[in-house]
Image (cartoon, rainbow, N blue to C red; front, side, top):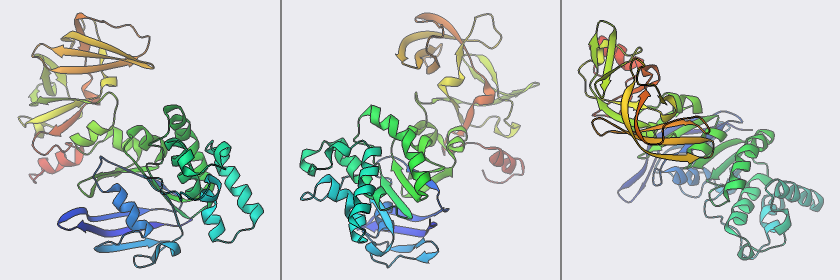
Length: 372
């Protein structure tokens, strides 16, 4: 196993800054997921670590050793590229065996190693095929198998499940953590699928604009998003975002939705009168009887069953749309007038101008008169 440390990495292509003074540190055997939209610098970062391209500034350390200027073949890294990068003249078997043959392993050990990882990835039946005979999903799994076969101390996986079918993708989300834990490698895993990030990462680094905008466990990222954009990226259906201005009465801080008071029990008075956005996860909302205190009147616009859950689109009296998610089979209105309940203790509050979540730390600074 090996640690992986990136110190103040900057990479430019002409005048475009792709990575901007980025630093990350991975412990031995840790799985860190790089998550973010296309163009945020995820793949470029993997290629820098692999030694395919060089940084303009910064250092890359593996196991405490500075490898920034070390050739790729001496870094002890396995990588599965997003675009497969298979040798077209080789069979799938020979492609997977590449790191083993490079180490001059015995033929028996090579055969056993290739067949074991191929069976796990369900491509053992196409080992004699050349890349042109493989489907995209099979090519992707062959590239992944090649990265795993050499059992390197550091693994770089660039969206390796993107081109596999939905069933296999689901199965691999379950299988990969076990396999990677068994290998003991330090893993940097790139994906644009938030469910994959949540399932595979010990921690998640959310990237935007060449920087890490939030680093934390899957639970921290989902339940304490640093800003509106991260809150949007994590969740299906997406989070509800409504502009509000917090108020205060004798019972505490609250906001109004359709003239109905929604208490915010964990919010300090410092936010009163501030232009904010409230974030409400659809699964934290529910339908209620009209006579219940705090019930918010809405009009049901549409209902969509999604296997394990049902998502309902409702509209408030002022025309604001809200998504409500409930477990499949749970009763709920399908049309017409209805009421929803909102638990303010599960709400997020964001600054309207910056998009940053207003955390307890921010509120503490505001109370002391510092800039938030």
